[in-house]
Image (cartoon, rainbow, N blue to C red; front, side, top):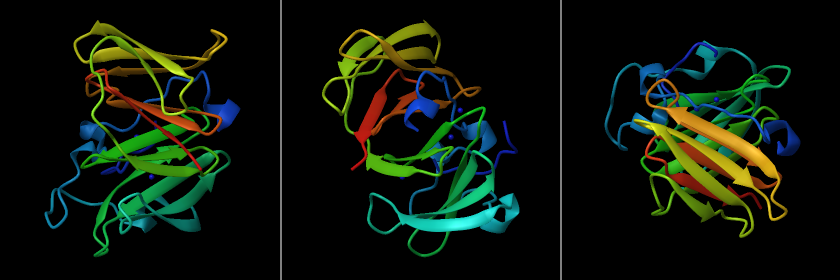
Amino acid sequence: MSASVTRRPILLTAAACAAVAVTALGPASGAFAAAPAHGATEGAQARPEAGGGAYVRTVKLADGVSVVKVYRVGPGHYRADGFFDDGRPFGSIEATPAEPCDAGNVNGMIIALSSKGEVASWFAKARPTGPHNETLADGKTVARVTELGDQHYRAVLVGQDGRTLGTMEVDGEAKFRAAVKVGSLWAVLETDGGVTSHVAR
């Protein structure tokens, strides 16, 4: 439920995350965008103890069976390690003061983490890609996506009053995924220009 620190195979704040461009871990650094399907294995997998930190809690994800274990690594620095229902790890994401939100994609399930230790997860729906404008999950925030180059996109989140609420930018594998949280709204930008969003309940 910008995903810099040492990278591992990865999962996937109101004001703290707003207006900050954040990049989640990409495949080269182990982002779980490329996580193997359930029942498969792929590459070396990180164990929770590998990243250190104090255990905070376990959060069940949107699929109802997978979980992330959340660790506090330091002030404003959290890590979430993901596990399938059979206990196999599928990676981790980290949010830091420099990158207050991080996110990953496990077979269409988005997992996001903030530097306050907040976790959200949801299933991405079919959505526009490339340059476009779209209204996000809260029904009022608009993402204005522009193309800057090959797999290089910027999304500016704009409120009803025209104010910029947050900015995300991705650039191929160097910045594979970007995440931001504004109030209860989470948004994630990927390298096809697609934006997926979710309102935390």
